[in-house]
Image (cartoon, rainbow, N blue to C red; front, side, top):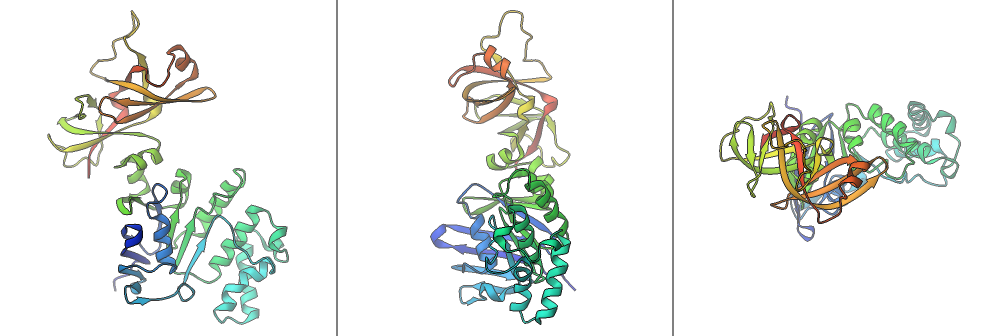
Length: 366
């Protein structure tokens, strides 16, 4: 018997120019990422039942729950949402908050309270059962909210930036708790934090301008980003060009980019579009013209790209420099603040970016 995906979207919202086609497999945790306003929240609203598509359909466990002429309302779906704010009922205790869902679904009070105690114990909050929300810290309230969500045995859990409102000291513990409690469940997660991707997600869907631009496992997307957004999320720079040799592509401006082809580089051949990713920590910056006696960067093991500084941002011992290649593509570098000062890096300055070929990853554009 074929197992249905936990959820699937193949629908359009005309007013938002959002046209999404994505799947949440059963037992998989899928992160939906993208710039603000590109359709991430729309995807969650469609799955939750707060939004109805103009065309296409939304499915849960193989059943159509939303389409142009049918719509199962949110309260009748076994879908729960955890947001930045826990949203606990202020007049109920932690125990009563967690028991509310089972009670609303017809469970006897005694059984609902027993389930609530079990869920609170699972998140380390059994001793907080009698407290009201105003007596809980932010981290405690988010733990109780997670207990409340799981007490109804949801088919799908939606996480909308669940850690964004927490103190940085608290967030790691809640992240670990979410990873533990959500293992094996179907989850759709919206986040801007790469740590959430590695800790909480199995797969990633990149949404750009209301369309799915890339899908894959976390490792596939972050090691082989196909958009500037995904590259920034992965912490790397992305340079595009055309394959000219076994280990080289050439940018539209004619700059040669030499690197190491990925193991997943099938389809690499002359003339195809290709991508190079560059870790900012591997980029050195040289003055133009080079000082007398400086080593020649244009060797067979190094890339040397003429560029112009766009921005310089100091962060203690390191300075992050963004430079623009001759064709407008941007490359980031992290250099010591002393080097930045010695080079007198300022926006508009012409420089040479030097990167060892061994530190550039190459793969054909999907």
